[in-house]
Length: 117
Ligand SMILES: [Zn+2]
View (tube, rainbow, N blue to C red):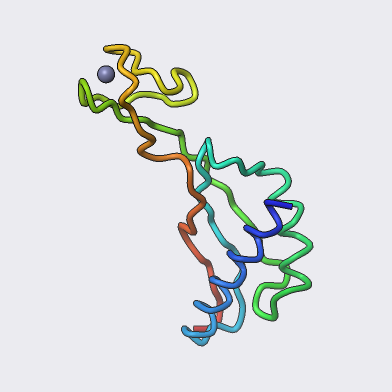
């Protein structure tokens, strides 16, 4: 499952950060998830609950917070940005197809709440 792989990779990163900072536990992780990342937040949360209790010493019971990020595209012809989900690949201002995704494809760790530093 796509989401499980993402959860494992996040746990690995957070685990590493906790270790490096001598934290005793991680209570909360905030993730920014792009609208067109293909990630389903509900699946992600389900995987998360299982994975933090089974795959990490530091993160048992750790809470996952998700901040959705709106997808934005940029038009090279008229240099404006617009809502990707509404308009897709065609610029709503000048109808150009020379557009690319600015934000909204990634999942990024925004914040990690630890105890015991
Ligand atoms: Zn345009």
